[in-house]
Length: 188
Image (cartoon, rainbow, N blue to C red; front, side, top):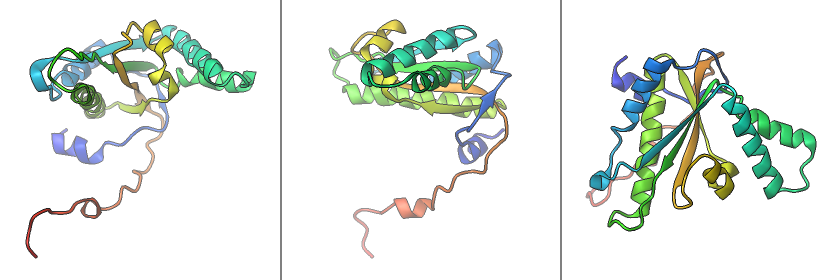
């Protein structure tokens, strides 16, 4: 697949199943991630791979977060939170290891991790898989971050769900790019 094809055709999956990327594909996906722009060569990217039974433990973290955030939630809502971690056979938690002691602004360190996540999605698509990028409350929860081995200063930029798309959905209407662009400083 040509790079331009991946860029123009990639869209987020709606539903993912097995097979997940195997070790070779996962290596390529992660190798793509660390090619993201990186001001100051800080290498701020951090990745936690979650698969197999670890997904159920992640689901428990999601449910515990929901219970802390909304103590009134019932058993059914908590079960929905648990099942979020099972919506794909492989999850990669993408984070920025933010270092406030360097001159590179924290936002740039975080954006670098976001660029790494996007590169991973493009790589997965180019390899015949697909992905969903999710955040939600657990991404910003200190207890979840700590349980996943991140420092409080780190920023989870997303949970990337990876697998094989069950039924490709129609590409969402994105509108015309021209509607989003204006040219500054040009005379008419």
